[in-house]
Length: 348
Image (cartoon, rainbow, N blue to C red; front, side):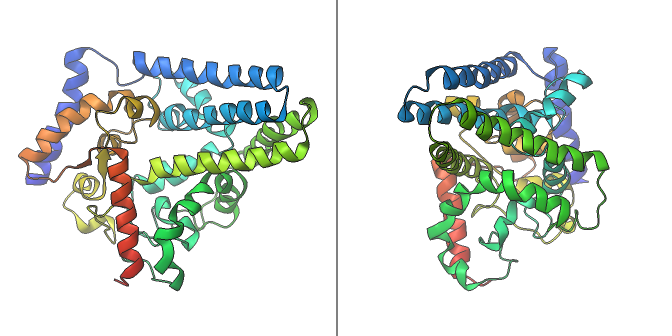
């Protein structure tokens, strides 16, 4: 069958890339450099925050500098660690899983939402966590068209700015106690994960908010306002980077996993790449801009995706499979915005 031939050639090419070059699927030099950057940035920014916050304005700048290390960690370290693709050593990669919790997001629930739901049900209503947005945004033609959706392209990025705050203070708890995705409803979680949820959330609030309030000589109100303001900025950037690979004008929105001959076709139909030659993207986006490779090989460290994408493109073309990409992230944002604008006007 054509689907079998495509799958076989695709995965043989990926396997041969590592075998012929004698390299590991896990962290390479670039990934180790990112891990070093993350450690130095997180620790160093805390040292600067407590050492040089001599005025309210200096505190705000240094506080923001530290919180941006969280975004870098989430995209470049935590994502790979929770896909088990960062290091082969099981103890190390399990430890690095908690980098999500370090940044305020429950790592266990993230794996349920992302690894189990998103990766298996890309762009499917009711299953893919990336298509929820609390009903404020209509991502697929299969979603009910509400009156508010007529204006969604105007408030789209306002909703995205709350992405981080929502995840830290609401979404994780909601997923544990009031799940909204079909795959989570009725699912029993280990008791220890409930304990970790509260312990890590309290630890995060403690070191991000309470310790600065107690030890840094600026008003508590300024610290809280700064936290919220920076999280709005981080949420906007993070949500935008995450969302501009799937809900786009060129991508498809199947009703279930059985619409294609093989799930590989599902990946290509619902996923687009962008910024393949961007130096900034390759160091900051955590491989999310080479998203086809990520969905085809989620257990491979993201710093290999650039070379794998070079293999994937011609094989897809050979088999008549449409590989979609946008030249820059701004083109991807335009496609994403256009998709939501179209769905704001159409009820189908």
